[in-house]
Length: 215
Ligand code: MN
Image (spheres, protein in one colour):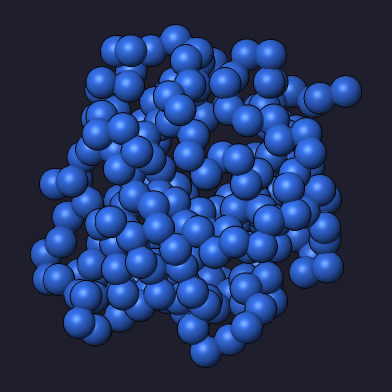
């Protein structure tokens, strides 16, 4: 039986490197009541081996951007309160959160108030990603050090995600853009507010509202 969606907010991102996609999605499912939210329940997680990435702009209790990297049949996920930037001189805090199912990739819509993550979500950017200087993304996450290239509509170039402090619990990482040809000083994600999927803003998705999925 599902537990209360608002219990166990900590210790959900940490997974043993050997966990299967099904095992990795247990915390995701535990937090949500799929009779109330339109988010995918992903009962049968596909064994996808793709390399897509997505960033969702999510106005929950607090605005944040969710960076998700497709790997090993799940979406590895970080919540970035101030959003990603192409500015190489800015470090952005990123909270490592629970792996999400592959079919969360293009989720855009409204999560009902009172449910876990209640608020509106747009697909703010998407594209593909490549791990740099390593070949096992799950091991890199376990090591707390991930260097990768993004090929998106808004985001591009080399990024690093680096864990601060000890592993476990609600891990704080830093998201940093490297100095490269795609770096742009002063780049602000809030200046690019529209969905790459639908062209909508969060406000427009919220106004359309309800439990609709925009597919
Ligand atoms: Mn979120």
